[in-house]
Image (cartoon, rainbow, N blue to C red; front, side, top):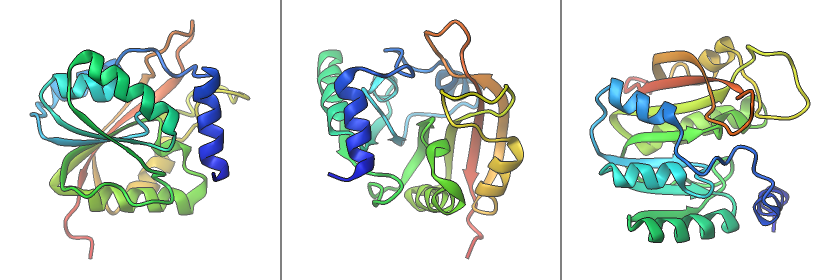
Length: 203
């Protein structure tokens, strides 16, 4: 087992999951409604215990969901069965493995892209998402924001300028909105809701 998988399996084994509210993130539902995103093949990166994947499937999307942790995926599979929805779950390290083959109409991640370790991993993630999307495909990423004091814990933080530098020129940013992660904490962590459209002229 590699170090990254061991780390995340350990978190799910102990239940040390401050980001897991047990419900889908309202930012996802808001963007889908406001932008009129119709049901389509969707890929969720870092699906955890499956809250967002299950909500998407119940809303009529054809969902593939990946995570690095086998323990997370086992919990997600059980929850999807209990909800009586169909989701394809796959164990994938999005930073070092191939994403499931699309084309997808939408890629969604809630705090997965921002966990990339440095510019090279960010660039690889952006390229992998671009390649998994079909023409005019959309990527919605919820990203920890620097618009709060530095802290020891919590999600990684990126500035708006960093996000733009990482995703250009492969994506056109359609929305970059200050928000916060849905959270059970008294002060939810600030976030960016970043909706991007795949560029086609990137050869």
